[in-house]
Image 1 (cartoon, helix red, strand yellow):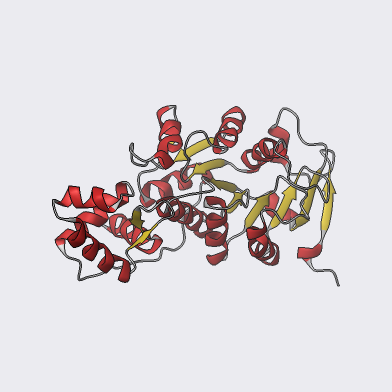
Image 2 (cartoon, one colour):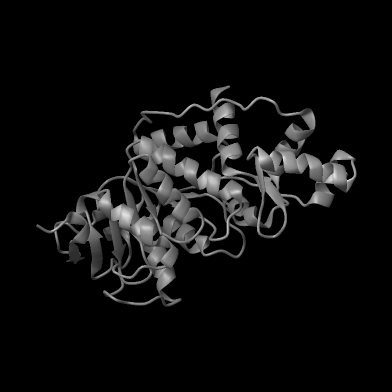
Length: 309
């Protein structure tokens, strides 16, 4: 017997199972190539997108959005790309939610290779992988803006976790605007290049999401559904005032050792000792460019604490 995850379809606008939301496009794709569960394409979807090279803040925000969506019975739609997309997909599946991946390659091509397990799990759990490119099509730059329009069309709203400028995220946002889909964006530090795009979207009209509660309210309003569960976190004890000051500052913007030392008014060696303690307890980590940033665990705990106050 053929497993649902192994099934393949080629849908056309005249087909009854062709996603109705794609008909909102000025030029609906003549053929939609689908692997997996067709039913999931008709359900309400929240697109969660963002940077391919996110900070821990961006990853945590993408995971938060996908978790809220999954716990509200909403399908998470993403491009399966590195960074925010993959984080969102994994978070949705961790909550036993549904995930739809829209590829810029053929729907049977694993791209990027790092998405292999995510694609497999998406199909195994009743999700779908779709594309407007023919089976076997390898990645081509021109295909991804077209892919982004499909992401926007399949979703009722688009959530931008983190985006710099320039960013491919903007083609999805532009498509969403043209389709009348609501755009949700999370603000970041005005000093962080990774948040320039997100902040810009807010400045031109995107709905601002300031915490988990405001996201939950927006999701309830847009999708007319309620979130059915919440994971409660307790604030970890034992942090010194200096450690709290550092963590508060890093939530706003990743910083280098010398910047943190200047902020605290201490020497670099003393600063490094405090940072080492925060690293050992899993509250901060050093990112690829040498700056320090809160870990996903610390950010999730901070968001849950603020939500429950």
